[in-house]
Amino acid sequence: MGVFTSNHEQVVFCHDPHSGLRAIIAVYSTALGPSLGGTRFYPYATEEDALHDVLELSRGMAYKNALAGLDLGGGKAVIWGDPEKDKSEALLRAYGRFVQSLGGRYYTACDVGTYVQDMDIVAKETKYVTGRSESHGGAGDSSVLTAYGVFQGMRAAAEHRWGTSSLAGRRVGIAGLGKVGKHLTRHLLEDGAAVLATDVSERARDWARSTYPQVDLVEGNEDLITSAIDVYAPCALGGALNDETVPVLRAKIVAGAANNQLAHPGVEKLLAERDVLYVPDYVVNSGGVIQVADEIEGFNFARAKERAGRIYDTARQILQLAEAEDVPPALAADRLAERRMAEVGRLRTILV
Image (cartoon, rainbow, N blue to C red; front, side):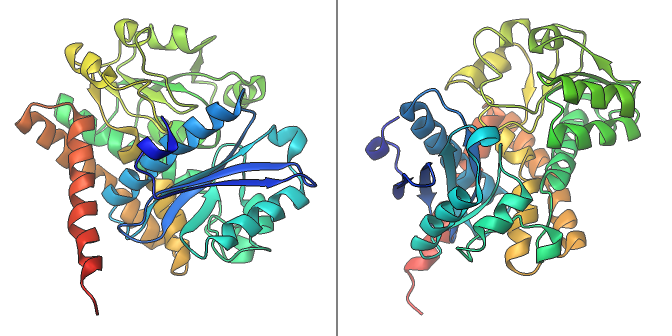
């Protein structure tokens, strides 16, 4: 995907040699309002990989924010580097200066490789930042409501497929026991589901063994998707659903927190052909952006959780629309998001 063929409004390359900052900020759309999306700090193999990721992620944020009912557009940022080695106060503050230079067209927040403490540092240089720590008046860890929203989307899919919104008695496979996967595990166990999980981190697996010994751990994602599971929840990096994994996937529902789960266009058709009900990732994982967006107007957890609970209704609407129009849920979700961006965005042309 090229910058000028991706339909993005603005793509900014940010470089500060002294701190080592190499970042890209992509603003896909401001039709509904200022763009909002997290900052991913990741050791990409190439600059092209970083650019591809930020273009894909920012587009997904526009659709996610639209379906979440937020008056916010879609944007995203990536910092190219190893967060364990390259992250520093100077780098984060340099990044904050670049965010500030956009004058409010982009609000940043946490993502893979960045945390609330990092946003507190970024906020020293820009006011256009959310996902700050509670001690600084922020919403805190956005993974709390991300997991809650995924659980709500999973419940909606279960009702659509099996006639009940409870996951009790079902076996759910979670790929990734990071910030979101840990909270999702708790929701599922409390609902009576059995959980099978995997993670590349030994520390994460040790956490599962000590916190929830009833969780069954498998070696890798291939072992997970070929196991006898009812629901598959990708909660790590994107591309989990591809030409190799879909044919061997045994689950009948896919609902997870990872962004860009479909490796390429057409995978949604492969899922439909195998009668796998896919709830689009940007629908079910929008609880986190709902949480940090609430911070912009003065954070209230109860209000944010109530809004995140509506993911259940949105997912139901999308699954029903997909069935009525005989299209994959991913296409139905895209249509709803594009309709809202067009209809509400048009109002901005009316001068007041």
